[in-house]
Length: 365
Image 1 (cartoon, helix red, strand yellow):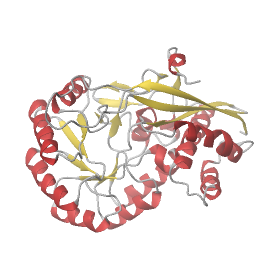
Image 2 (cartoon, rainbow, N blue to C red):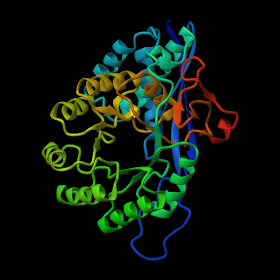
Image 3 (tube, rainbow, N blue to C red):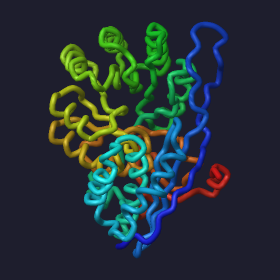
Image 4 (spheres, one colour):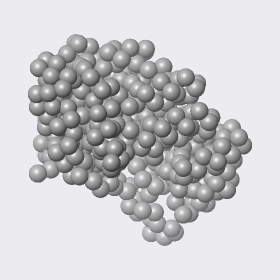
């Protein structure tokens, strides 16, 4: 199943916005206004495959250039079945500048397209192609990207998600106003109630002492996990947190190397791993991380991209929870559906995705 052609288009989709702007107090940063999605279409002898990667910050055109000037030459005329070898080939090709960063983000979209092409050619959904462990997975929502959302706006997002079957909501914290972060967590917990799941993500922005103090407070509040509380490179700090706290630690949304997940798993520094498909290099790389997690008895919850991770949740025993966002709903047709409180992948072959009728209005250039 040789690869005959590869294209990449750039789309810019608006993100949810804060509904109110505080007139006093400590203002928080303005959240991103849009998401950049780079959509790869890969043509093989047996059909096509679709893949994509997303960015909420700068670099979309640089990543697109890497796809069209570097990655395309690594995969052209190769077999779409050779995902393991092609990932190794890409990592070796970018060794001088480092695979992490733009290179991994570029390759992830192509790797996703390879898996879509393979499972489509086999006539089965990606979830079935990977093993099909279950019909769907529990999920939470994290549409409120950035640290600017206050408790009231986050609560509205959470309540809307709870109505359609979500377990709860993930809220980003980690501002300079630590007391304000604690207040937002408490207000959100009070508003959605004891039964709703709440995860808090700090993006590695606290120091160890602050993270310890907040984690004890969050435990008392019934918060369900604390994600990336300190700098991901601080292994000693994570060891202290893991030793002193009962609140589950989730780690990895800021990692861009598979080796970091191996270290965390081996050293017992977290209960949940949070690989980002785009940062680590796509489905092939995430499968390796999930295998390490399963060997160490850890759970995996990939960062966003539910159009793909719903398949992984249905296929891999280690992937126990899905991080659902609605960012690309306006871009794609198909994709996962909510059934009895679970996020279920489509039953059509491959990823079950295609560009929607409204996609053209989001296309850049």
